[in-house]
Structures are given as structure tokens and as C-alpha cells.
Image (cartoon, rainbow, N blue to C red; front, side, top):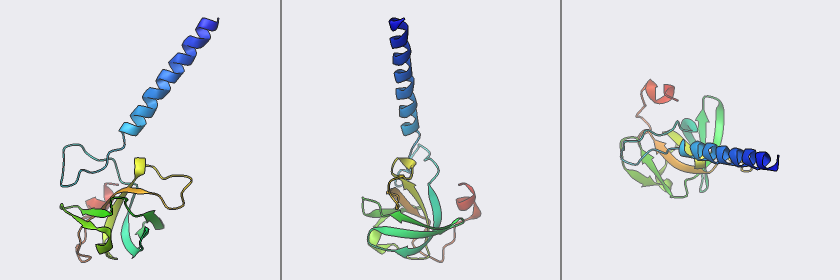
Length: 134
């Protein structure tokens, strides 16, 4: 009986490890300047309405969302290239991927692992597919 209990416990632990590994592996950020692996869907898509030293406010379809600035200190454009976060302007359309692709429940402002803007020109508007894909 004890042997059966330990076998079940081992099976549960093994299945849990596989599930955790799979869940973590399913989070893929975009590769700067392209790449073969498709990224997972961003956590938030919206228009930059405010830029502060440690956070950014986006206007999304669901309302305003505050996100942290990437720890890398840079953001990327959909067409390639990167810029320091200090150059981020209001009016740009942006997509953000949170650390681990999940909002941290204990943080009011989610940490951002990767931030992409459609273009550095606020007058450039993305095609509908940029919004519809997510």
C-alpha cells in the first residue's frame, strides 16, 4: 500500500514538472530584428498616452493600463531597431509582453520583458491586422 502511495506521489510530481515546463516554454517573446520562432500573443496592445521613468500608460480597447518599463531600458520597432525608453513618445501604438507572459498578481504595475512599437512616428498607423491578431 505504501509503495502504491509513493508511486502515485512520484507520478503527480513528474506530471506537475512537465506541466510547469510546458507552461513556461509556451512564453516566447519576439526576437529583435525578426526570427524564426513565432512569439506568443502580447499581454497588452494600445496607444502610449503617458511615459514616466518607471512606467508607461497605454490606452487599450478595455481602458487605460499601466505597465512597467522594460529592465533592458530599450524598446523595439516592428520594422527592426531599438531605442532607449527615454525616446518613447505619446501617440505610438505599442505591444507589451510581461515577464513570463503573465501579469504578476502581487504587482500593481506588471513588469515588461519586451516592448514593441509599430513605428516611431505617431502618424504611422498600423493595419487592422496589427490589432486583430491579438
